[in-house]
Image (cartoon, rainbow, N blue to C red; front, top):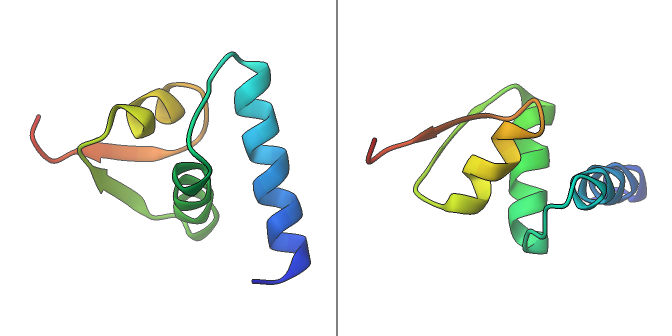
Length: 64
């Protein structure tokens, strides 16, 4: 990935951390890419539910 993308992912993760969220790096990357591309993230993971509550992530738990 380009350096600019990594900088934006870092900023996104930092903004989540300032809101008190501790999320695995891979989940931050996946959520960021979904937001950046305008995708709905289909998941069954509490981290993505938390990220969606504190960001623009459009997430749907496939077991709800």
